[in-house]
Length: 399
Image (tube, rainbow, N blue to C red):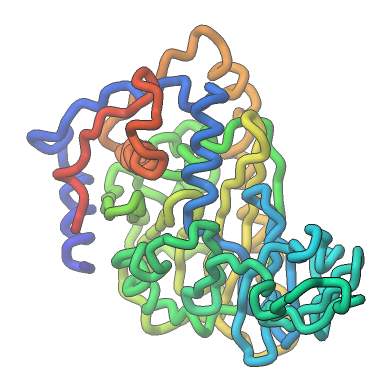
């Protein structure tokens, strides 16, 4: 993998045209960003059937620790049980739908619906209810909480509302093996923040799947050290992808990482370059040996969205995170502002008659790969014909 990526970066830096035989992309129909019918399909058939990052185990450290997850529109309760396992349930009492918890996070011994007092264990079993004599032949075992698929990559918790979904690690293909080098079980949660942006979620997600914009948007920041012309891209099944961008100078070190603890098991692709993974649909993570952000893109209606950034670092041995992290997060926020500064204006443009579609080039092929997978998740037969993308990249997906 290391040799292949290094060869790929050298090839990309020296090519004068797209590779022989690489296809011209048909335009991505503009309606995919604004059409309410398409966006409703996307919500129901993709967002509610995808593996979505929810939290880190550090955020629910003890038995009874819980937090609420609402990004799909469903109230999902994520809790650590007395056996140490993390589970997810709909925050919905089996009696008449009352909430089991009302706070966004906390710590409890068990769940008690505040509407009529039905009680459940931390692993979702119904154990008691008021006036049981009034229910005919009620079998408590048949009224456990309705669970939501909840699986782990290291200490990172993912949920999926599709009970028939492919298991998380299987669905991620080669990504878990690539992540072993950063020791996922040693990554600790540091910080998270949310930023509201007035644009469709794909307007900004697209931007984080390419580096074609660096010289325009990041002139005084990352373009100073990233060589976008050497970027190599790997497309994987199920919409996942990897983008690796070399530094302009092989000896360059990000000054914001100096003095931080690093993991010594990473390859030179991580330590000396800039790999960025996309877990389809909405998680982008540029991993480094000193720590990583999970950048998450969440729709908030058709024309607005939230970016969440969750930060993780190699275990620093207890206590508060190292003070250096504040500067690193502040630096990242400045770069994030550069990425979001035109989003609201672009949203007005994509809603105008002047927006006919997205014309992508070879550098932007991760975006087309993402849209191809979106149609597969929705089911091509459900996508209105004028809004479908033409399958183009099958021969360029690594299997």
